[in-house]
Structures are given as C-alpha cells and as structure tokens.
Image (cartoon, rainbow over all chains, first blue to last red; front, side, top):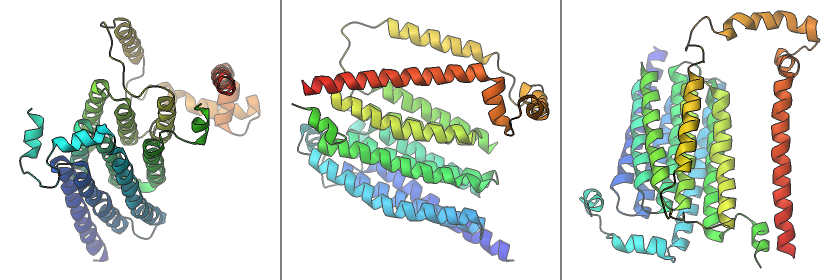
Length: 123
Length: 92
Length: 178
C-alpha cells in the first residue's frame, strides 16, 4: 500500500517535472531575445529539475541516495539564480558592445511575435 | 514511468541543443550550456534509477559544481576581459 | 531497449554539436559548444557504464579545458581567421587518424564476448600477484609491476608535458618584465 502511494507520488512529480522541462526547452526556442529566453530556461532549470529530483526522492526512500538528491537540489536551487544573475549582468555589460546590440536591434525586442521562430530562419 | 521521464528529458535536451546551435549571441549558447548541464544531471539520476543503481549521484554533484565553474569562468571573462589579475598585469 | 534509444539520441546530439563547432566562427561560441560537447559525452559515458571515464570527461572537458581555452583566448584573438585557400593538410591528418582508430577498433574483442582477456586472465592475476610481487593491492601490482614499462612511459609523457609548460610559462613572464 505505502509502496503504491510512493510510486504514484513519484510518478506525479516526475510527470510535472517533465512537463516543466519540456515547456522551458520549447520556450528557449520560441522566445525572441536573450532575456526572455533566460526566463524560459529558468523555468526548466528550477521547477523542472527540482520536481524531477523530488520525484526521485520518493523513488529512493530513506537512503543515502536521498541525502545526495537533497544536496543536489539545494545546490541547484542556490546556484541557478546566481548563474542567471551573472549571465544577465554580463550580457547587459556586453550589450554596449556592438555584438549584442546589433543582434537585439535586428529583432523586435519587447513584443513577442508568434511567428518569430520561422521568420528568423528564412532571411 | 522512469523511461518516459528519461525520454522527455532527452527531448528537452535536444531542443536546448538546437538553441545552442542556433543561438545568435554567445550568451544564448551559454544559457543553453547551463541548461544542458542541469539536464545532464537529471539524465544521470534517472538513468541510475532506471538501471537500479542510483549510487552514482556523486557524479551529479560533480557535474553541477563543474558546470557552474565553467559558466562563471566564461562570464568573468566577458565582464573583465581576462580570467584574473595576472593576465591583467601582463598588459603594458 | 531504452538504453539503446538513449545512446542513439545522445550520439545524434553529439554529431549535431560537432557540426556546430566546425561551422561557428566566433571562438567564444566554439568554447561554449565544446563545453556542451563534453557534458553530452560524459552523459553518454554514464549510459555506457563507464563512470570513471565520465567523471574524467566532465572534470577535464567541461571544467578545466574551458578555463584553459579562455586563458588562451585572452592572449590571442577571439575570431577565427578565415583561410585564404582551402587547407588540405588538416583534412589528410584527420582522415589518417580516423582510419588508424577504425583499424585499431577492429582488433578489440567483441562487445560482451566471454572470450575477452578480462574474463580469462583476471583470476590468474588475483592468484599470483601476492606471491610474485608481495603487493597487497592487485591494481597497484598490475600497474607498477606487471605493466611497469607502460607506467614508466606514461610518467615520461606527463613529465615532458610539465617541462614544456614550465618552459613556455617562464619565457612569457620574462618577456612581460622586459
């Protein structure tokens, strides 16, 4: 009985994690510029990964594996925002340089066009 | 169940690799690299549970640490133009 | 079955990333793509049950060599110079190396075959290493006694590489001071 409940809980968490990972990955391809893509990626990197790890905690039970999973979860939850912040700061600073500025003025910054994925591939 | 989750993670990984290959700026590729590192950790953990040998999660911790070391090295390089003070001192 | 599927997907992604590395012109982007390549490769090693190699690949490929490449980029230019005329020599070297590797691959024992030497000779070493060498650890006995010339060669290679790096670093620092 308790094993069945555990399996079901693990399955639900894994399913939710897979959903958020896929949503983040699709968003990374559909979003128009870097910062919106970071927004999409952080969905997958925090929610998706942590839900997956919580699901695996249910699979593992009270063992050493759970301790490792919890360490991993804590590390990812702490480092993900730090990495996002560093990435955004470095990108902003490089935005003064023509590399990023020219790339961003080419695309519609701000408004999101649904057809931007196909539109950017053709020309 | 685990196999389905593993396949979903792999599909997500393929999509992120597509972004890494397309990504107009280096920061896009860097973002994708960070995501791929996280997804690799999930693949590793899920594969451990799939083969019923989940003891290799230490590798996941190593991946996480190394992933962030790499990301911060690249980002520091972008912000300061070098990796440390020593290369700075070499410039005349 | 699922392991085969995972292996195939990871190999396809590796191929795509490799083509991307070749096609990209900015060297920073190439460094980042190389890091992605190492992460995928390490994941593939784990799927193939080579955990120690995966650890090495992740540490060396994604961690250390990224930092080394960045250090090299800070000393040189960051955009690949376009070749004036088509380069023949690198293609020849790559093809010869790939051919040699494939040729060597055909000599390996078949995957999972019970006749490969690791299954027939391991017990032999376990039995005779202590009376012959007196070393309690069998791995150390094989490395330092039965394969001592091999280990000596490896040590020589590492030593030479260290001397080379030291020589390069000393020359640079001297130039910077003068």
